[in-house]
Image (cartoon, rainbow, N blue to C red; front, side):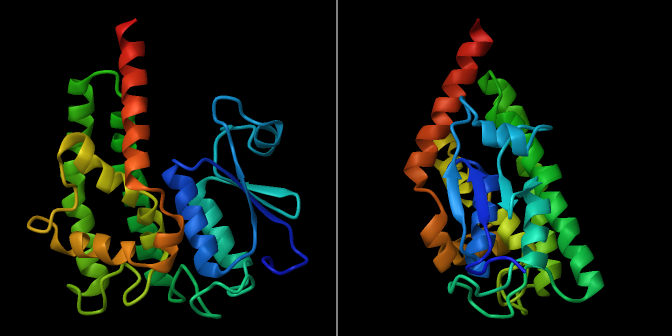
Amino acid sequence: MAGGGGEEVKLLGHWGSPYVIRVRLALYLKGARYEYVEEDLRNKSDLLLRCNPVHQSVPVLIHNGRSVCESQVILQYIDEVIVSGSGGGATSSAFSLLPADPHERAVARFWAAYVDDVIGAPWEKAFRAGTEQERAEWMGKVAVAVPGLERGLRECTDGGRKGCFFGGAGVGFVDVVLGGVVPYVHANVAVSGERLFDADKTPLLAAWLERFGELDAARALLPDVDRVVGYVRMIHAKNAAKGAE
């Protein structure tokens, strides 16, 4: 099992990637010791290209010289392999991202896929859009998908009676997956004026957002919102310039 003093655990990432953030959150919650290597995505390292030759992207987890790619795959690997509390920072020695019950695990994987496929995919398109009109169209798809996630949180928590997280009283797999975009949810208010998790329209998600931000893991790892706002605006300007060529 990984995470102890004799194990080599290394994470290749980029500070602004929500996919990297979720992996770092999982490692923190597991209390794992690991080395973090910040990648320059404009000049990718030989290590990154060698460890992820297919997508050549972050995050990449390297465990004893063997690489694991794609963030949700990495999260499940961490949950299966990393010993909770091996680095001294886990909330519980028995902490697990995924529940023990097979049906509950399936439900968690469903909503995690929803986050990436139904919300994350159009959001990524908006992030890379070359015009304001195109960006607004993609963000419209994100806004339409958010009430579905509210419904999922309602089902997972029995309307909030079991807790405020997808994992119930404590964070779980879906919370960590969604947690990676928390800085971007806040940044979106500054960039576009749109509040994706609105207290009137999606009260459970709005409460989730507040409670997630209070976690020790979130306070330790989530990037500063102002820095994310600057990063988003830089990417928008860069893509607008490309579109104008």
